[in-house]
Length: 72
Image (cartoon, rainbow, N blue to C red; front, side, top):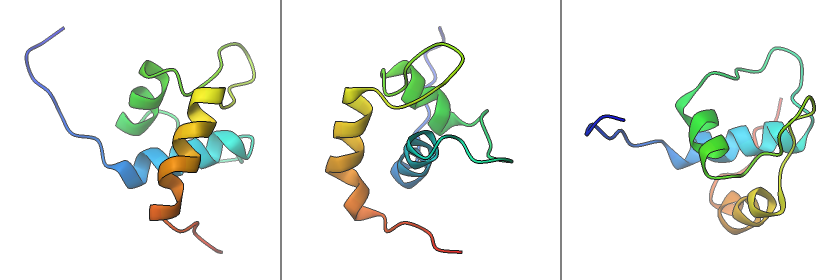
């Protein structure tokens, strides 16, 4: 571990949590700082199917409203 710390954009964390909630749609980006942050903090379940844990769902419910969902 290094002494260097880097901030992770909360909006990107919310986006990654929504991707996990929705079953990781085709073509989504896995290797981001937001994904690493979310995995480190226990927001994802392990195994083949990566989904939200109860902690991840609670965090998304708490801060998700700050970042409206993107519409296509």
